[in-house]
Each structure stands twice: as C-alpha cells, then as structure tokens.
Length: 119
Image (cartoon, rainbow, N blue to C red; front, side):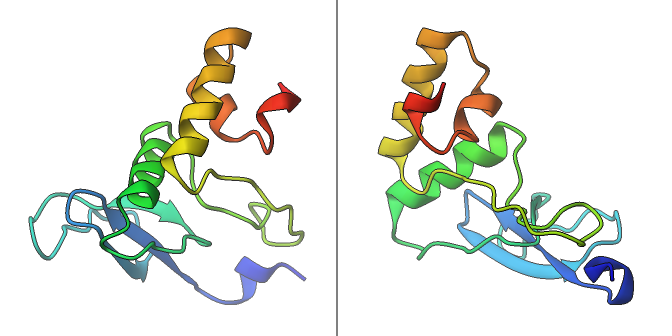
C-alpha cells in the first residue's frame, strides 16, 4: 500500500536566515516566512529542525538545501523506506566538500554520501 497515496501529509518548509521551520500542506504555492516574508524552502517530509542557536547544524541545513537536496526517507510513492544520509554539522559538510574537490564530484553527490571514504 502506498503511504503517500492514502493520506495527505504536510511537509516541512524552512527559512534558513530566520531559522524557522513549519509544516504546511504541499500545494505548490509559495509559503512566505512569518518573520521576514521571504519564500520558505521546501525541505521534505523527514526534516528535523535543529535548535535555533545551533549554528553548526543550521550551516549544514543551509548547505544541504542550497545543493538542491531534500530530507526524504520514503520512496517517491511511499511504498519503501530507503534512508538517505544528510550531514548534520558543518564539519561533516566540509569533509564531504573536500572529497568532492579531490574526486571531481558535485556538491550534491558529495553531500549525499554516507562516508567520505565511499567516494
């Protein structure tokens, strides 16, 4: 049975400069941040917002979203669960970017690697 076909789920939207996240319906509309009125970024179904004062984790969130990745654990239809890795801190982001520079990978590919040695 398809998980996402049966129920309409709310998804996470993030404003990185304000360090805010909200769960809103995925309707294709632009959702403005309640603080700065800038459009919020779609972060996916499985996003877990770090604490507002945690600079290293918010830097990692900004890098992941800027690379075009989302926090998704389900397959697109929701039938299977394939955990996807995303770096949690800025040192993990830096390690993956060093691997990208050495291996010729894009930021998107490097940030989705579970271990930098896997490249």
